[in-house]
Image (cartoon, rainbow, N blue to C red; front, side):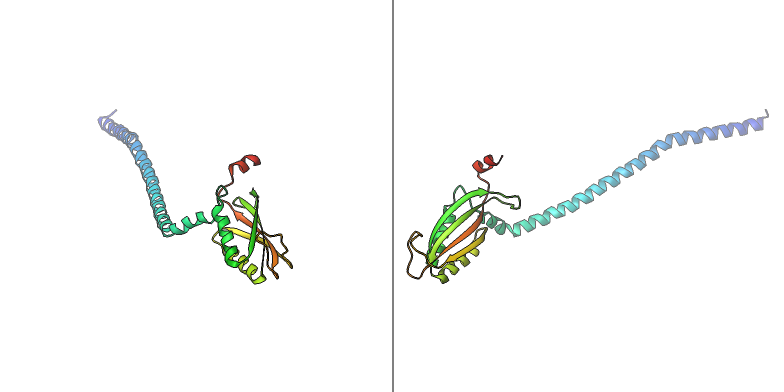
Length: 193
């Protein structure tokens, strides 16, 4: 082999070796850079998501503070079956204000599939002049409690079947109320299972 060919061959081998070395040495670095780029993009997406979530949390806190009084009031809409005295007093007070006699007969607590909350049905019986009965029912419908007037029936004569008696010309009425409860009583929940 001539010296010129040896030099060219040596340069060629050296160049191939150098390119191979550079390729083998830099390839992992480029792969690492690409992987780091993907990780950085992933972290940036997470940070953007966290920023959006933080904004939603701040909006929720602002909204909840704005409606805090209404949220507190929601708790007073339900009847506590363990202590229903306030509710029964309310019924008696509006009956007295409407000048109708009233008897209250509570039913058993229940929770049907279509109801979100447990409830109890109350049978109301009373007597009074027709306009006063209408006034009493209207006050029930606008009561500060979560309840539903399921039915009202009025009969011609009151008789003496209602506590407190009745006056001449009074008529008897019956109403069925569905009153929602704060919770299902423990004894009722145990009986359902």
